[in-house]
Image (cartoon, rainbow, N blue to C red; front, top):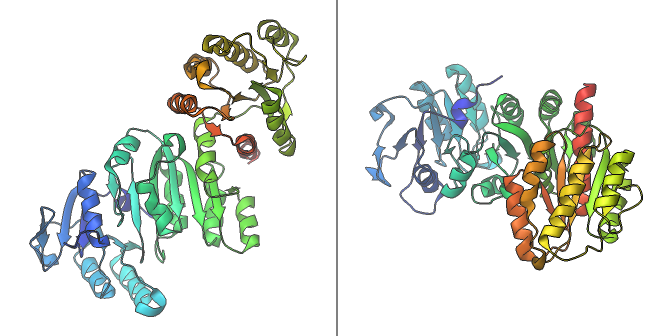
Length: 449
């Protein structure tokens, strides 16, 4: 296994070709490091500048006061020559972020890089690599903007998702885009060509990384090495992927290896909430609470497609719901359909959800709970009631669906649910149910392996 820690969390970095021209890739990489207040040492090499953004610029490698742990090349010419000079002075980790087309710019480049890396025992990433964003350790080599406030936000989390994208644009967007519900992010990488360190090596690194809990992949190409790495990794950490290539057989291989295929790109992040925040379901039988038969039927229709069942409650739990909730609750106590409530008052609705949630979760037959919320602003629904509910039942998944909820009330629910680490799906009934099914299937496969 290759040691990739110096690429993701180096103690010092050298930027070869840092530019004074604002809004260029070779300027932005330095600007990012300064704005996020990277704690390591930053060296830059530009023979035509004495300083850039207040950082001293060295004119030659011989002037460097020490050998940096990582060098990043952002020049577009003489890559082989620069690479060898860096290797000769003892730099063991090099990222090539120059924008190159290997087939036209330098047909011998990869052959030369391979020869040099073997001669001097150097690991390298790239070429044409957009870079790395390491939110947990406050480091980036991205050549497009990374926002400081996102760095500060994600740095506070202990574990989150890590994302490998075979697209510079999609990887780079993580530097300014905040996923749904402030989904915590650990690391992001776009490798470019990846002739030495490849996606499989990064997967192996994420396998051991304690701050990575869930792994997301955007794939244009599925290699045998990726399949093998996912096979080794999937029993330990969930690997969600979205493939845009044409080789259906390769996609099937990755699924058989344990990869979890999603239907569209945004589902990578929507389902990551479930895998990150929900415990293992003990069984596939669900409890449902909803404000109307329509909302409940929407959920049940998708449950049939996913071969999920309604949990059959004990008589004691069934009677609690029938006696204390009322409304149109079915004779079996599950699902709980409380329409119509006595009054459109927040405290009344909260008490219904409080009683129903505790009763369903306390029943051994219930493997997970789906909450459907279909409310308007006047109800003043306080989602904080689920703080104690989740504490008293930490072993069961809780998933929330907002169905036609009025905007201001929906914002309040999403904010509180995010703080409580309860995934919310806005008008995405089918996605929420399918996410539970994928969570159950992953844990079931883990046990079999």
